[in-house]
Image (cartoon, rainbow, N blue to C red):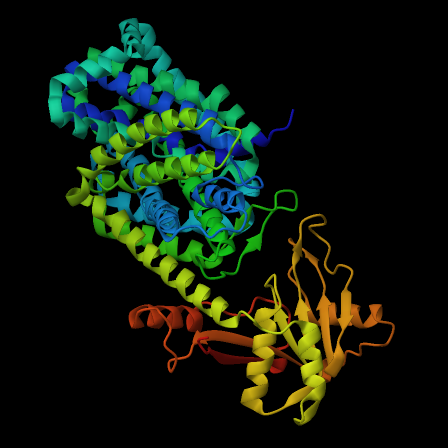
Length: 616
């Protein structure tokens, strides 16, 4: 049997797997020790309904080419509409959900690591002053090792998490053995009675209980990294039973020791004093792994957003030749790591950030349900009444959690929401600007038509080759760039090449695929050279292969070949239907982020210029 489930255990379930460190204690600190069983009932049934029912049995059945998350559902929705444009409102919902996930990614590593390292206080209170510094060091190391890929990380993290789940199960089982009456928590009426007795204040309890399911959305977003079967196997056979046992054990301990309800290190009290040191070390390791689920999800979201034109192209590195979805994005990794370190430096303790946790991810959970419903309503084989009933139940669950977590907005919940708002503005700006530029380029001549135009033009022809490299699926951008560069320079090259270098998934390590050449009038060549997704595209080598394939018809001279890379802006003299402040944001992104990929182009042969697109 494949051990992929073990790697999934290390990458996917770190977040939800370390929730026993703070979830139940946070809720019990509000209700008091006398309601420990009721709180445990709420936690257990929240995990069952959210993770087991919603995500494992419903959401994870829906994927787009093996991918999960809000963008995968959006891609399914676009595909089902057969070319009909998706409404702006639905795009807004998608951007909001993805931005919330990115916002939550700034908090998860911070809270998890601070909570675990803070457990050292149960051993020696004087060590509290070193907690922030040690946490920052751990976070720096965590983000530094991302370049090795989730597959390699999972191979190390998986066994650690297996030990972690075994340990928390043993700790909980011993307390259950001493106080078996805690099994009453499986009766959902225990939790319902607790909420009924608290009235509207029960929202605060649910807001704390929601901490037990904050890793659910990352579980779905990480679907592409391992696949559905390994993730479900790891959940139902290892993570789920261990979590239930530990939560019951904590409730049993509080029943026997009511004074422990207010102790923020409740989890560590289940362990004998002589073993607390190793448990703190193991908990710290587990929380480092907990951060990995969100980090992997952020990489996936960035890639999916780019493919849907909601995010600028960021340099990405594929890290697994068997799973094309496992990627590493250096710029996203740096920004996320920097924000996490700053949060530790500012807030210094896990308790200070606990209130901020949960708001963003529960909002993302609601967005996921809305998108799922939209996809299901487009399928004629699924009865609409069934979809409606399931959607209403899912939204009732999600919105209850979101509203409950929103009660913590002023106490820190604004942090991920502010970050999410910034990301949402960037997504909207990029999507709108790129759409307007694409519309302005519509109607460009085909390569055949443009070749005839080149042949008929009476302009100076420079004795060289100009190559316009593109990863776009169509020729419009390249032909527009050629015409714009000709207008700027007042000349054309004797040989003009549109070079398309798409990635191929069938042979991930294939450096250069078989070139496909089309010769047009006017010295225009249309060349396609695929390459494996694990390999950086080599533009000069691709042209050399095309030259060899042409049988001497296409001549490649490296010393007399120049590569043209345009940065596309909206012309300031043109009236595009977009606010000026969004124009400035888009221009800033293009100037500073959108750079040529590492295509092995010689620096002295690369010409980067600003292409100002005119409105139609």
